[in-house]
Image (cartoon, rainbow over all chains, first blue to last red; front, side, top):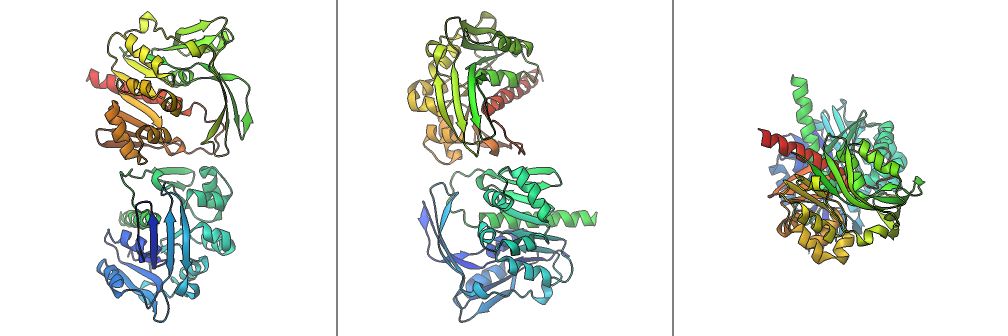
Length: 258
Length: 258
């Protein structure tokens, strides 16, 4: 038991921070979640889509980390999803410069047969209808379904997002998104409202200030390690989600074995 | 052993938050520090100054909490220090509307004789030359000297402030003040620079995000309890400092007794 399926973007990012600038580099929510989870031994697979421009070396790198990429569809004459952003001086805020959906625009996810019985499902940031389609494909009810999302989907596809949120166990969002989704400034009240939308567990990420886990009236706080130097925070939330999911999985498995 | 001396303002505050508005109520750094410390059994005294307009009932209330007020000078024909401020919607930022120094303008602190051998000294937010004068009056070197200060003194009396900071063990400041004092954005680097100014312990308060304690390359993190409702955050930092000091004192005494 213990298969972990990750759905999310596999992408190119071009990033500018006060400390440096990159051309297209490997990015995407599923990439960060998968690489983070792979630090622990886990059978994981990614469901995503890329274009013919996506380097084979990147897929091989993921495979070498024991991440199954057979669910990453390659559209030969398409282009990979591209995001470009520029961070402000405090690294807590950023402007999106370019969002080229490319092959993501018509993405119909297909879960490989050997992942249809996944026990753990991580729905990375993506269109909620894509997230919903994956939930519906998993034949056995997973032990844990975790969803990450963003203000973009709250602005543009709220109804579909609320539909997915009904069906998950854990939601991970940042403080501003929690406020937007709930209409409450207090994070305690925001979590209460989001609980009522579906998830038993509400994880609110506060960047450098750590993260709060709300469940059944209890609250657990995880601090963030203060760093001397922060170079590029892209993917930090996904990396956190990948680690959280794997730790949770280990914990649930050990509970089941006892 | 274990006498605790607190120096700081005893004041009137008028406060406006998104949730309510007060006329003149009891305020001041020494008031909050003293009331917080009094929750634990401790022999404490306050050194401060008030005007003839300061209600006797407030002094009696402090006495009833086992706080010695013989060091609070009363200038009969003077007026008590008055501060008025308005909080913004997020309660993390505020505008000062009025600062009437009144009797504080010419304050020459006098430590009562029975507190000249204090073991623990808390220098609440005040003019650094007042803080320095109290350090110089304490005959025996205290076991722990804690200083709280604000951006106002960094802007206006930086040289005097640096002189006091040389002589203390612990500084408590908020994140923005740590950045201003050190010229470093990273709190890890800010703490390193502030260590070099004198204090072995640097406590950086982050409001609702908790507080960091830096010492000798180590960092300890204390979360803040997330509240459903925040009504008025005035004095939160002083209340925290009062509690911190008393816990520290208990810890040091128990170490000495072992």
